[in-house]
Amino acid sequence: MILLLPNTLKKLDRYDLLIIDDLGYVKKSEAETSVLFELIAHRYERKSLLVTANQPFSQWNTIFADDMMTVAAVDRLVHHALIVQLQAESYRKRSADQRAQPQDASQTTHPEVGASAPVPAETGNCRDN
Image 1 (spheres, rainbow, N blue to C red):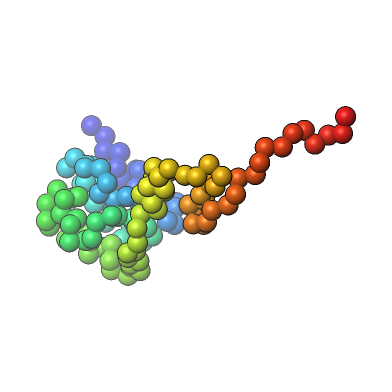
Image 2 (image 1 turned 180 degrees about the horizontal axis):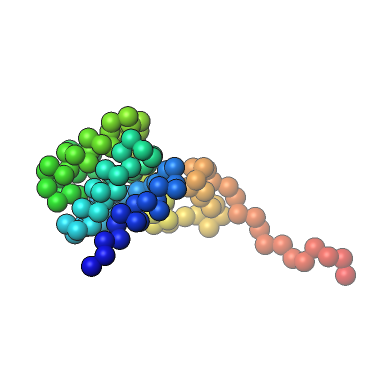
């Protein structure tokens, strides 16, 4: 069996930044978390990784196969890192909550700006006949 991981990691080296979004959102197998660790270890001090997660580092033991791998992965990620922690309501949840609320027929809500604007009345054809 030919191992493809080393070749794949080399191919990914052409990118200065890799983004791993929603780490921990879906439970991964031990083999998948081992590959994830190899990616983190390979990129360490060589190229950039941007990782988003909805769990604090203290809960990452549910992501990786064992505690030692978790500590090693977090150690590599936080060394030289800029950590941005957001303490805000989820935009997706807020949008879903707003869609679920009944609205006045004469108003429409724009969740991206948090404002309401009147809905224009229907108009006929503006052409002169």
